[in-house]
Length: 462
Ligand SMILES: Cc1cc2nc3c(=O)[nH]c(=O)nc-3n(C[C@H](O)[C@H](O)[C@H](O)COP(=O)(O)OP(=O)(O)OC[C@H]3O[C@@H](n4cnc5c(N)ncnc54)[C@H](O)[C@@H]3O)c2cc1C
Image 1 (cartoon, rainbow, N blue to C red):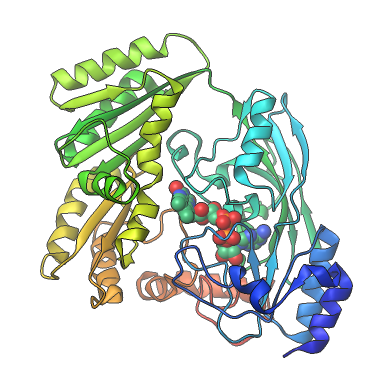
Image 2: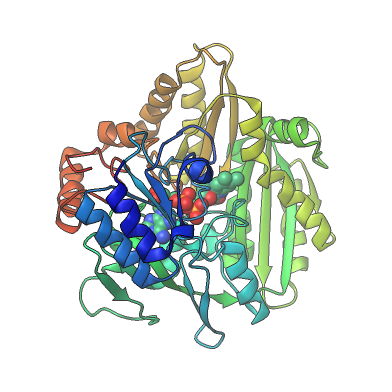
């Protein structure tokens, strides 16, 4: 055990903020409980200066650093390996909202602020932070930025990357890089902050950020529609885009199997029973009149056969209960048994053909349950497979990803690579793209101490 490093870390953050043994256990395993690790310790700095000092101590002792925020990531990126030598750097104590500017529509906060807390603080000023995901009660801004999180509002507002105006980062040499500008327009040189967004902690530690806010939408319509096929869901999307434009803030596809899992494991019942496919959509506007237009649009869709049944929420509580069905799918799947997650995207128009081809590729493997749901409006599906304990999940990953590649898609639309998909990224990415990524990593983190073995295969280092 690296006793000298432990003593130095305790001197930086105080002994009570260096956790070892049982106290560190909750930080050592990921949300899905797939990647148990063993850290040297968990260190919880309370300021940017302390993060920088921790990094310098780890460099001096050659210890790998694993940044961790809410630990809700689905790719095993925030947990250490089993060597007992890596330091988990938890951002959870860096939880101050530094400023909210309702006129400039920005929020500046530290990396350990829980996403929901940031959203509530923005809402108090009549503003909306448009990053919405089922884990928002635990995920923290640092992790959201480091994974370039998506969620249900990407269709209208873009990925997290599109919402980050400024960033404060501690580099792998312990220097603080201050990119905390809150400008909407800034073309002065390379946009360096983009390097750290979505890098999953492999290039540096995000300690604070300035995020773009939008006006709080006063009028919202939430509807659950039954559709006969993914093709029909795309026709409904096209109609909604024509009639509602960018007032559509979410357009989710949910399979009947997914709703069945939610009912089985959480007792939550859909108001629409039977059927193979459903769309959960939301439209929102600051202006009145949205509801009439949306209701007319959905009526026309029913007449045209693009939807076969539907329910429109009449109150906030009803809207919340429709969203609860969607938000419990991931946890219901976890309770259903062993699973292989595929967080894929393909060009929208290819979704029906992709679904048919993936089902065909998996047909020879017995006992699989296809739990398919996701952000249809973004071409992003969670093509998840619940399987018997004896099934070879890696073989299933490869089968699905090969189909994704055939359709020109991505093997990670929003959850990231972490350690879960390192092998698949290396298998499917062009060699020159991987080589450039490795060269960048080598330039910024020459000792290889930042989140070793995540995103890219390890090349030396701790
Ligand atoms: C029920 C459920 C639903 C989800 N739904 C969605 C969804 O719709 N869309 C979506 O995109 N994701 C979703 N996720 C995945 C996850 O919530 C997001 O990836 C989230 O952004 C992770 O935030 P976190 O704070 O938990 O990060 P963590 O899990 O702590 O970390 C994630 C990665 O970021 C790195 N990291 C963490 N903090 C920092 C930092 N300060 N600096 C540098 N690197 C850092 C870690 O090392 C790790 O590689 C879901 C997860 C669950 C459990």
